[in-house]
Amino acid sequence: MKNAASTASQTVYIVSGFMRTGTSMMMRALEAGGMQACYRQSREDMRKRYADEHYDPNFGGLYELERKDYQKWDFPRGYEGKLIKALSLGVPQMDVMPDGIRVVFMRRHPEEIRQSYLAFFNRDLRGTERLDERMEHIIARIENRRDVLSMDVLWYREVVERPLECFERLRDRGWPIDVKAAVATVNPELCRYKLERLTIGVL
Image (cartoon, rainbow, N blue to C red):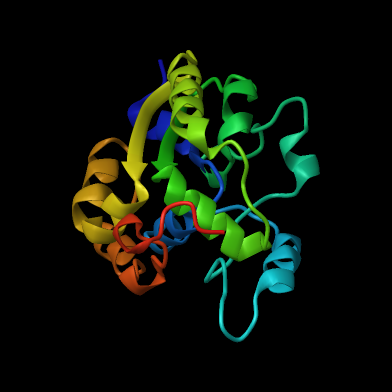
């Protein structure tokens, strides 16, 4: 029988969610909290292409792997004991991991997602009227995996407004992090699309 420390060292830690839900913020915080995050610097080309002196859509980076990494038949093998970002649709299809996965799934109000997406790509995101339903479906599929050791759903605004509570929750659920170091990276000023300040449906 494997002891808890041995199993933890082989667990894959995953940040998931739809685009523009704070997944990169969460990756940056967990990396600052001491986790070994894996991502490709080459993915920064996309961020730089859309950023300018007035707006950086992903302060600190995208924290993503390449598409070819996600498409490997045995993904996420090779990332045992490490932290990766995998957007929502990829997680249910991942290979089953012998020592399990821990997932934090980021959520956000669909209108905040839509307007943040519009600011990033200068085009509208279609289908937001069913986005909550799609998120619930993906969450249920992830929770149904037999290798899930923990699955925590956190709202972007919850993390921005109450980071200590959120990172303490993850630590208590088996995420090996320095809570204070993680909390220190959260900058509320970077939450630029808040529902209470938005004109709903604006293009």
